[in-house]
Image (cartoon, rainbow, N blue to C red; front, top):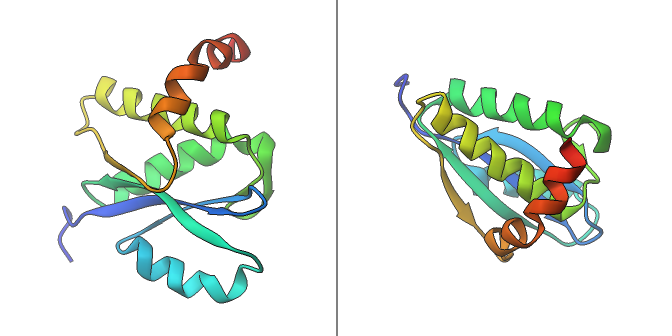
Length: 128
């Protein structure tokens, strides 16, 4: 396995608003593995392509830490979508500030970018 093989940080959302944040080389295959254990409708909301597994783990750990107050069990979070979107937005900014290759973010079924823009000020006030 190459040290530079792409890995992905993925976010799965259930219809009742729980989010699973994890990493995988193949997020859709991982989702298929998890699907039998998810008791309601769900889908992959977004994927962040990272240059390698180490970067994916680092970003995952940061997200889990930043969202700890919303953690329900394991890698599952009951976090407001706006908060999650803004934390992910900040994660992208931080990787650029650390001179890491910025992750490529793929959004699925949700207007994440609009959500981040509309709610940025409220999030910044909350973070102070």
